[in-house]
Amino acid sequence: MPHGPQSEGHVAQLSAADAVVVHMPSPHAGGQLPQSCGQLLHVSLPPHVPREVTQLVLSCMAKDAALRPAPASAVAERALPFGMKICAVRRTERPAPLAAVEMLASLDELLGRADHLLIALPATARTRRLVGADALARVKPGVHLINIARGSIVDQDALRVALDDGRVARASLDTVEPEPLPPGHWLFTHPRVRLSAHVSWGMPGAFDRFVDSFAANLARYVADEPLEGTVDLEEGY
Image (cartoon, rainbow, N blue to C red; front, top):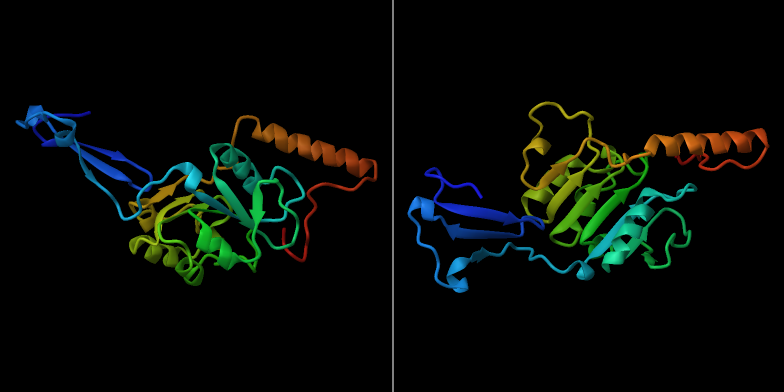
């Protein structure tokens, strides 16, 4: 930890949506070291107290994907071993991609249950601003919103209001609108926002997978076999 005359104590932020602030006097600034654990820590609990991961619900707004693993399925596969409860909603009544995933009937039910709300939808006319003021009014207070899809799905003005009043405790945004954001945009500096540069798809070997998928479909096309990952022109994805 840093020390010096410019600080009167050490402050460590243990963050699960900025969870706990721990303060310990610094002897370098003339403070007295505590004599007991009771004197050691001054703990300030936030409005949304962290819980064990096994108590958390990950809710996925997912697309109907012919290719697997779809992004939401891949996230669910990684969350399940930690004991998280996974629920999802999507456009059609397809069965759950994983046995442990609970498929819900409505977006309202999904919003009300989510501790972590994962957006993994295509950008279409029907999904534009789907997560807006009305949806954000129905979320569980303190929700963590994660967008790995398209920036147009989230109404960023409504998100700002929900972040400021605490309904959304954290927004982790890999996609925004527009891309790139203009200099000085509020998303760069808001304390409850974490941005990444539209790279959630990236991993070692990602381009090899793209090429392998294309080559496999080309072979199917030449053999006059059904293709994988075809686009529904009416739905737009």
